[in-house]
Amino acid sequence: MRFRAVLLGVATLLAPACSAGHKGDDTTPPKVRTDHSTTGAAAAALVDAGPAAGTLGESWHVDTRPPADSSDPQVFRRLVDGELIVGTVTGVDAYDAGTGRARWHYREPGRKVTGYAETSGSLVVMTADPDLARGSSRWTGLATATGRVRWTSARPGYQLTSGGLDVAAGQGVLPVLPVSGSGVRGVDASTGRTRWIRPVAEHGCKTPIIDQLGAQDTDGSLFALREECAGHVRVLALDPATGTVRWAHDADRRAVTVVRRGIALIDDIKGVTVVAANGHDVVAGRPCPAPCRFAVTGEHAVVTSASQALAVDLTSGKVTARPLLAPYGALAVAGDEVYGVRGHLGQGGVRLLPAALDAIDPAAGTVRTGPAPFALAEQPGDAGERAVPWIAVAGRRLYAGYSVSGLFRTTSYDTTKAGSPGELGGIPQSDWPDACAVAPGYKAASPPVTPAVSVGSVALHDLSCAYRLAGDTNASLDIAWVAPTPDDAHRLLTVDAQAQPVQVDGADEAYAYPSPPVLWFRAGRFVMRIDQTGLDARALASAAAKHLRTH
Image 1 (tube, rainbow, N blue to C red):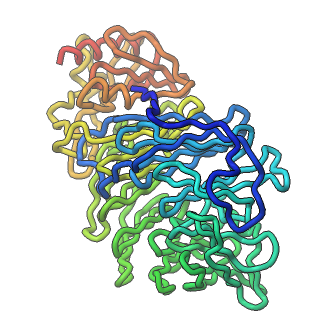
Image 2: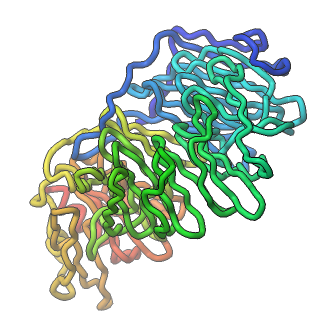
Image 3: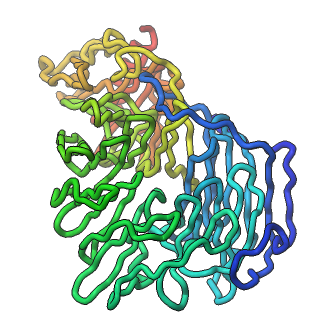
């Protein structure tokens, strides 16, 4: 269901904002028009816990439209202080993370946002004229709880960015490389004033501005700065509160540093190195084929790659590896668990429709697997979203961000059907039909030889059957998923523009992909797939759909 955001009891302003808040340390910022609303009390905090095992259903979603003329649309998302904050180059909106209701927004019409930095209850919005003209830059500090302006300033220097709209900040401080001079300046995100200035580079070394872009991905527990010395490169870890260099580590020029909860992952030509808070290497030289992901919970780190997941004990240095059927597109942490989304659920002769949502407990060495509330298309003919690059877990909910019809969509999911087996979303194995018994009037071409599909400790059998069609041809029919309700099944069966709606009598919906030919169709809570799309295949689908609607 599409949520229509309604903002009640909030004042909306369209006026010069240069007088709002107090100024930072630098020159007077340019005067701009603002489209700005605020709210009163803070949103309710979310418990630090993930969803219960079972089927996850959509509770609400919000859509954010990028500018129509953008060739590379970007989005900033944060789940913080009971709010979901979503920003693009045109402005930022905050929503109640529990209900999805709009709370506040901030825009500067006619201007472009160049970055967002969030830390300790503050959001710094960085803007400039569309042509990025000199002297047009302006930084505005907002209170995340209310959206109220705390300060404004001209840009005091160059921010550290991952290459997009996400700017490094932590412990209430935004690190800035001055336009002229050397060292690093720590700007207080709540006041805009300089908290500290540090000449961090050693004698004969430098911290070139351009080489910081895309060099790091930090949660703000440490700032990672790249330092160039004669013939070598180092990564410097700065304490956000004071600017003190905690440690320095040799790296190469292509190194990327990821920081989570004070622990760093340095990924360079030698492999990955996990660096503890004291600067000592816990793991070194491990290969991490892309996509390389990193998360930390408690005294353990999780490093995932294209083919395996490593659980690292940060105290002992012990590493436990397990193979991955598919890489994680994104990781998130809640409580003692690391959550990851993989391309598809299960292992075996039939690909099940949902993506897999894994809950990893690195301390216990366990992985709990279940269906994600969406599908991911990994190859031509697959149903599902093309990518879900952002997830967050809190308040016993899963939040996911992806693109739909040119919009940035962020969806909140909670458990709508808890129960066992969690691997199947709480649907018992007995609810899954035999694929060779769903199409009355059709005969199997040969005895089924499809191996079992395993999802964790659960095994499913007889999910695929080759049926004989007219003209002595065969068509393979697969049971792709059994959901708790027709609505749950409908939300999973999403397709792109390559798929065309087709008529299948008895089916609630059906779509045909041309190359390779794949026919997807749904009858109530059952989703099926046939490897042909012609009229004979649709007749087979019709027989299966009519049969399952009565069961």
